[in-house]
Amino acid sequence: MTAPLLTTVDDLATTDAAAPPRRRAAPAPPARSTSVPAELPARLLRCVGERPVPTLDLADVTTARAPQHVVRGRPLAPPAAPLPLPDPTALCCAVVRAAVEVVRGERTVGQLARWVSPEIYETLARRSRLVADAPRATTTRPVTVRRARVLRIGDGVAEGTVVVEDGDRVRAAAARLEARRGTWRVVALEIG
Image (cartoon, rainbow, N blue to C red; front, side, top):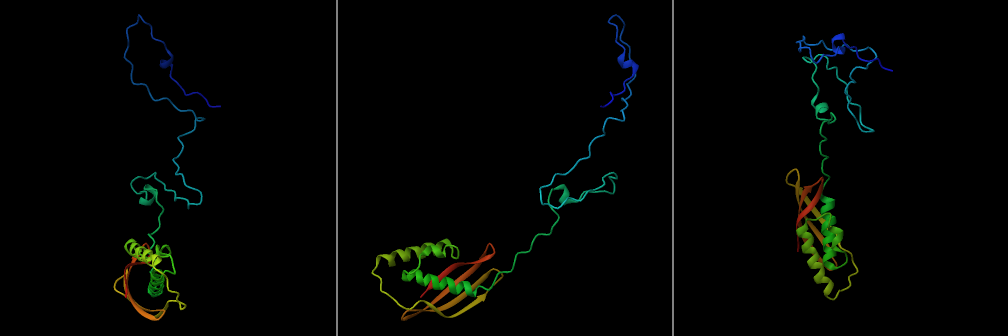
């Protein structure tokens, strides 16, 4: 149970309606009882699993200054550096081989959607529809890569040439790869 706040005798006196109003001195602030709790300290809420935010003693305002990550509500961690891209040679060979199989009618173009740009996807889809309407010659040998050469031009750009064996024919392909969202993506493709 809490004790009531202390009041002065002047506050309890009632004023008489006939008495002229008298001017009082400014009342002193009421004294607090020791049983009334002081103001609760401010607390930062955090999610389950987060690291606890460091507590600061802000009693001395001149020397204590809250770090910006605490003020803005962000954890103190350096931004993660992007992972280096892998060697694009394997992807270049796989995309060229799969594109030749799409042109032959042995593979669906949807399997390349993740690895090629939308323009190349549309071109291969159009080409595969033409092949699907034509009579299909049966080939027994799969498409194999004879040789490939991929050269990195910059941090996120590479160009490659791939020579593939397509049944009785030998084809050459040129591809340009660019880094998109941490992986390589073919943005230009020419198959001879």
